[in-house]
Image (cartoon, rainbow, N blue to C red):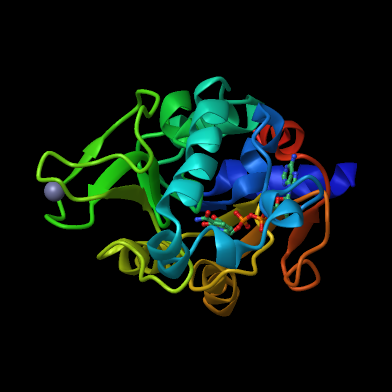
Length: 238
Ligand code: NAD
Ligand code: ZN
């Protein structure tokens, strides 16, 4: 493992362009539960009951209660050493793009700048009637919250069955195609189109480094599968 890490670090330090794809696992050590791993939300709930437009239409109060619980947990958390290592990597790499599936905002709070958010942002609320959106960090007082126009506000995240924010996947695809190294950290790589960035990098000849305590469907295909928590392994790459 150690020599594997040393080889991966050499590739990272030599690269002029790096793309990174993160998932819920990079926030695990900030105390935010992941979706599919042990202790993940989906062990307790069915995603069909929480993260779909149909679920929200059926019971917006229930869905908002769950999002608000997550929002409070995130507000009380701090970026971890993994988030911070990615900021340091951005600072020393000529071309660096962080593509995240996370909606928690911890990458921004750590100081990452060139960021593509594939799945939206839990701090944005959007009106289902007039379509206006704004940042809302205060604790909700009304479930569901309402817009000035009287419409119901929804979380500004991408739910199952919805399309990604305009242009986000195109930018991510271009970035991954152009990158010498793709680092994939803390994602089960089961949700598409985001997971499709991994075979795209492999097909294009990029070096792919996966960081995850568990194996994923791509572990045997990537160049480096570094098994461990991202808050520990990401700093090793610098
Ligand atoms: P995931 O829960 O599917 O996978 C998390 C991964 O992190 C696992 O592979 C796990 O082994 C790994 N992990 C756990 N602890 C770790 C650590 N300390 N360091 C590194 N890795 C660790 O999460 P995902 O892959 O991000 O899921 C993909 C997307 O599915 C999510 O971004 C989300 O958009 C979507 N999703 C959304 C909702 C929603 O409410 N909108 C619900 C479920 C899934
Ligand atoms: Zn409105």
